[in-house]
Image (cartoon, rainbow, N blue to C red; front, side, top):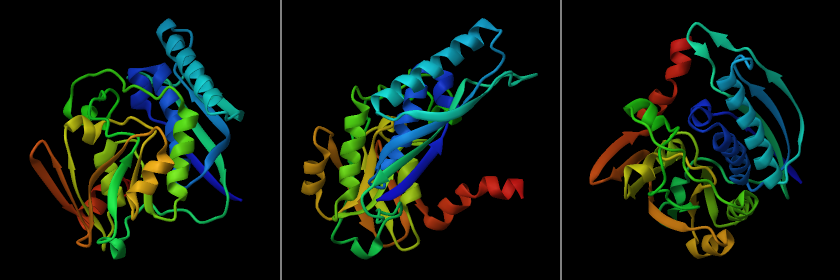
Length: 279
């Protein structure tokens, strides 16, 4: 039996919708495990908020507690420990209600698909999204709206998250799955960029900006040599082909007839900006 650990929080999500944002945090962490073929076993949390003596702050904090509890119950994942941090206020105001979750998962065996593409199998494989493109989903809470401006509702979440996670884990465990990466912050566009390596790229076409940037959790991008096996393992989840794996170490992403091309080196330069600025 192998173990896997996922953790994270997305304050943008819970700023837009504290209840569903907290549910999405739980599903995203479980999907992160599923990308390695694991399913959640238990979780610990850290519940962060501002001054609870303020009614609006208390309401948001109450909503993330309810959302996280409901999501973990639906995922059959007991929260076995955690802590609370309140009165996180500054002159700029209170922090968003922010649930941080760490989830432990298990799987048979220790092998797991990597989160980078395999260029040696470019000709024999294809790229698919398991769980839907999200082309009609909202952009609320997304990094795209944070950068471009505007508002939108939070994306819809699946009615049965446990079934979604189990299906994603089955897909990741297939011998034909060469790489697997869950979709979360930044949406499909960022997920694809994170899959690119020096000797493996991707040429992808998406129908809408929502498909590229919505952060709806409960989805995987998969490099597979057998799309039919993916469809069988995915059960009720939608499986959509989005493009090809290349050997040029670059991402070519076409959305609404506009194409963005970026090499692995350029992607690394963007990814390393925080480390450079803090050095």
